[in-house]
Amino acid sequence: MWHLGTVISLHDETATARTITLEVSDWPGHVAGQHVDVRLTASDGYSAVRSYSIASAPNSEKRVELTVERLPDGEVSPYLTQQIAVSDQLELRGPIGGWFVWRTQQTEPIQLVAGGSGIVPLMAMIRSRVLARSTAPFQLLYSVREPGAVLYREELQALSDQDHSLDLTYAYTRVAPKDWPRPAGRIDAALIANTTWPSKLVPTCYVCGPTSFVESASRLLIASGNDPEKIRTERFGPTGERQ
Amino acid sequence: MGIISRGFSGRRSAAGVKLPPGQYLTTDFPVLSAGPTPRVSLDRWEFVIDDGTNVLRRWNWESFRDLPSETFTVDLHCVTRWSKLGTFWEGVSLDTMLADVKTDASHAMVRSYGDYTTNLPLNDLRNKQAWIAFRFDNKDLAPEHGGPARLLVPHLYLWKSAKWVRGITLMHLDKPGFWESLGYHIYGDPWREQRYSGDE
Image (cartoon, rainbow over all chains, first blue to last red; front, side, top):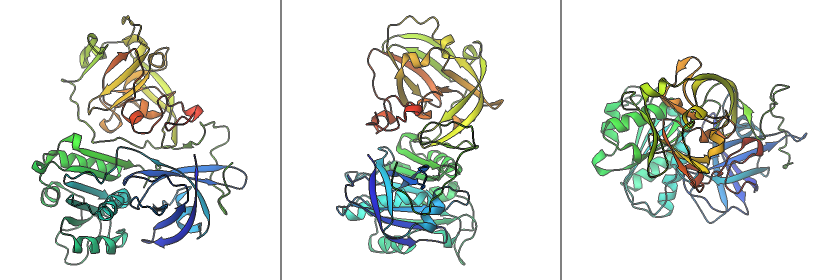
């Protein structure tokens, strides 16, 4: 039931987010968008479990990458982002979830909308698309506090440079880079209208982020003509520790 | 016991609080739903109990609110592992709503605006343990928490407490609802930790 994963590398994505690459010898495989439960156990047997989205595409190498954002009052995320070391072992359960997933057989246009670390399961979808050589047109609208908080920046840039059917838009909520065309602010109707698929193309939309972000993003997508049934959401609250 | 996580001490919950296995305490109220929050206006809201063929009972908002309601305080346990204790609600007991329904059905499929469904044994909707709730903490229930009205069956994981409810279909055989078809447990008892399909 629980799989044992060995940490094979650690990579700090930002000041507060770290990617943990695990080798899980009996990993059954996953679909982009799914998550795992991670269990930590103290020496007296006390244990704590939290869910984290898988960042890596399904692959044949029995590797699973998790990107974890450190929450100041978290019980599990500070350990995963600060204490864990290469060759440590972690217990995982999963993969879990069959709804917020992108399967490589899907050919329709895909609209991804990320708020903050809500990018993680969407990154798995982007990576899965690349690995499967899918030509499904993808657009990502990535709302993030400030440039320093962007996850996977270089990889996203490289992927969208080499493939014009992967389109990338950043929206900064607090601090925008110099000369950025749009002032810092929350996503709004104009941004949705200008940077997401026209609703007549009937895209499937995946929206992931904090609850308030998901609520407003999905409301804007519906207001611009998207069918609520084509919008899949994944929310994480302050205590959810769900990435 | 699992393998020891070197250097992990964790945070124990307050003494005297007994939570279902694998849960931790929260004081806020996280929101988890599979899609956008439906906006349901009260003038087109309705709640229907049917048997798959015939409508057995039907209420609009006004006739629903004419039913005797009660206040109750319950603990909530979400499959994503948070528990929130002592939440205060107002709603109509399903014993009241099912009182005149004659049926030999064994199970129920609860249906929501936004097409969410969840299944449970009919007995779990009876016997003073399930409500259609419309107020939380003395305020009208907010849309993101399931307003205008949601099911509350607090003895099961919270995904069974369908938000934005619009009706119940009585069934003679159990059938999986939305999450139950996507890898979650068919019954979902938090005290037996029935999270995912395959759990006991």
